[in-house]
Amino acid sequence: MERKIEVFSSEGISIEYSIVGKGEPIFVMHGGHSNCNEEFGYNSLIENGFSIITPSRAGYGGTSKEVGKSLSVACKYYLKLLNHLNIHKVHLLAISAGGPTGIYMASKFPERVATLTLQSAVTKKWLMPNDKEYKAARKLFHPNVENFTWSLISFMNKIFPRFIFKQMFPSFSKLKYNDATELVSNDDINAIRKMNCRQRSGYGFFIDLAQINEITMQDLRAVTCPTLIMHSKHDGSVPLEHAYFAQENIPSSKLCLLESWGHLIWLGKSSNVTDENIDEFLKSNKLL
Image (tube, rainbow, N blue to C red; front, top):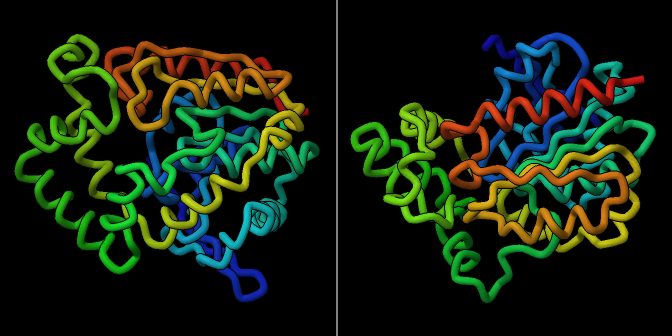
């Protein structure tokens, strides 16, 4: 995959972004702990004639943390980036913790968003302060220690890839590992290894935890573009109720429930179903 990475600056603020492929533009709001080097699901979209623009979201990669003062400020700068690239309208793809940004952008700037696709997306309150996962995340992914955390995970993953895959599996899936073997692909262990090597949290994940509380039911109801909601029935990271909540409140939405083994719907033996569904949706809602 040939990836072009650049930095756009405006008003002293920087946004790192990547571009891959050629064709109708898809603007990706990547998930937590990721950046403009994200690649899950990209190959199929490129092969089907789309270009993919991925900004590192606020506080991730080379993007200034000041972009994350609010969802309003973040979307202001993402639109500046699109203007810089002379792109007026995009297909918007929001993944996991990038869900609130995608929903906000689609609701506030309908003239710039042709379609919205939510993949394993957060659509309402998630990881509250009393949750043990929240408390653990605050320690492990604090900006002062997150680089050490990911470096350790990456190092261990290179030596013991299958062991790390099994250890991380419960964070992604509600299924027990032994019950999911028929759904897991031989390539998944290597895909997780590569993911762990490219992931970092920076200030981004802390910003995510704050911005999630900004999204409202009114924001979802204000989304008017065709919307595809894709979620695994076995997601162990973002509960399935987030997908149902989006379907109930986004007027022009369609829910696609997947049999993939967990949160990472681009992996597993049924990953082709994920690819086929988003490709069909985007091609049936071409940019005007």
